[in-house]
Image (cartoon, rainbow, N blue to C red):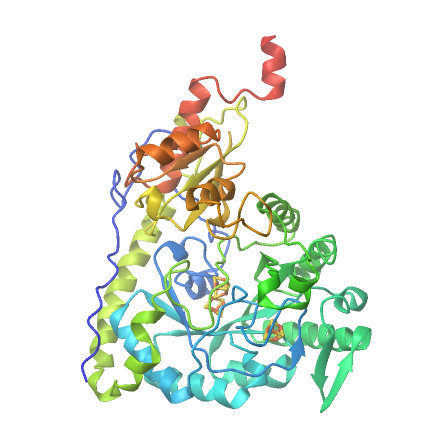
Length: 503
Ligand code: CLF
Ligand code: SF4
């Protein structure tokens, strides 16, 4: 059986610039968010699409769903679906044996050289399935040593497996920590399974929290990069998460990823049935900003499936389904050649990212001078990756959101068009895709895309969002900065103070 023929995602050139410099005056190119890191840490994260915001435009990840069981219950989870601590609720992945998982990883790595990271994140908790999880990691660390290994866990059994994690060179671990207060925890976790007993309420939450904190300390002491995921549950832990952020940062966590609760009644979760609302995009951003004073925030998480394949936000899993993998003979995969090819692709991308780091920080002020009279503006961007505006508005199922201000261009997060609707959590059937997209872009004043049709153009304008196709194929930050300057020059960005002065 031959490997499936799959086109390689091209490493896109930044149109309008060459790798050595920025074409626009008052450059708005990507700031170096990794600049403060020691070289050793930077090397660990520069090609990890979750740990580096820049990397996620260029590098891909994949998950293998080898871990079916779980040892706790979260009120936002239904065991019929993937672990909601990393996955979008309501998604079911195809369960693999460790052998099938290894075959799949080798096939994907050969076909998608940008795939740098293999994560195990479900469909249950990886450390509640230690044999299956570590059998997969063990085999892969031998057969595909160029792939970074990553695991995501609820943390209950983390202290028990910290040594084994280090032993397998698993350099990146995610712990979902929703609280450090057992009283709050009791409202999130109805029970845990611990020492062969089911434990409930505050006592269960206390044990889980202790294990998570101990596990975090042990991993940090071993030099493993720990990311903390937290699910934002309005009215339950939203006010508490800045305290969580502060504590985990003090203990050495590298990154905090605050994700929105998604609780739909049809998912059959406790919160879904109880109509617990999730946060709005603005509430999520506000909490991420509140936490960001204490540590680096991840804002580009896509709540992936436990069997996701490809760039964040895309899913090429169907190209590597179980029936195709089962027909595959690993002898057909010339991994040594694939690894050589992967190395070339990785070096090319890292060279490009290094070149971008030499660019001035993203200032929107003309000629590098900050302008203090313009208010911040949110802009939505349609992109398939590569750091450029390259997607048709009508094809976009998610938009990256940037904030341009007089100081810089800042990545804020992403919005999926099928997650939001004008009626809150329950979209009416009559609501069109365009209506949902416009609702998803609430708060944005501009949408930048490669192309857009006449009808959506009019609908966006009517909703107060200015569409623009003028910056197609330009680097995102440059284009966002350019549009902000145009708005400023057109007198659209006067701050209240400036307006008062004029009056
Ligand atoms: Fe997977 Fe998670 Fe590793 Fe990334 S995902 S195990 S750290 S390789 Fe990434 Fe996906 Fe968000 Fe997870 S975007 S859900 S944070
Ligand atoms: Fe579900 Fe994951 Fe929570 Fe387990 S840890 S109950 S699989 S969300």
